[in-house]
Image 1: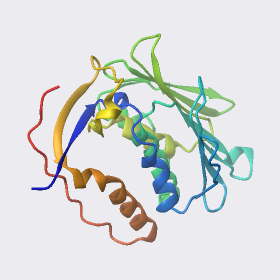
Image 2: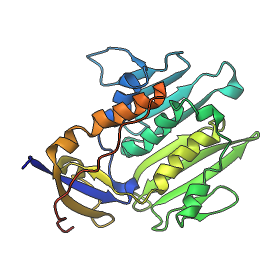
Image 3: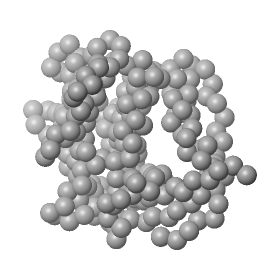
Length: 250
């Protein structure tokens, strides 16, 4: 029998904690050919698209956003930025970077970012405001000079902001929608024991299961393989869901 590992299933996804940044950074470099600088004495990661038009920066910034994506489209009207707080789950950020690196991204029609939320029972308004069923996540769209910026905040209470995502008014709607679609997902996120420390246990549903240690070790390589296959247009490998032992309680 193969070695087994404990893994936490945490929902809702927006309260699962940040997870491993490599889920975002490694695929950008290894599967989609984004280049990186090397500054071993500085606690930051900088990745740039092959054409140098889009930059991702991950840098500890107390009291400010840790993740920043900037796109230079050659003119102010075609340039935009997005940013995410330190405790934003990496799977939500990965939804944005996966959309950015999707070869078919520019072929998609513009989307309504609130539509995925509405379909999952979130409160939405024509103004662009929305709220999760538990009231923890709130979003607002602020329109100025014909463009609409998005501010999405997760807070346990008014004094406990967990993270905020910001998209400026020129961010393509399909990019914002990629984020809200991941935000609306009811699928639990997988976390290690260490990654569950500090989570607000009274606000989350947390279950433990045992899965083959091999499936945990190969989760990121499998993600790399799928993104690389998408980039080259080759069929992705068949999905093999991990076998799991019976779940233990909360």
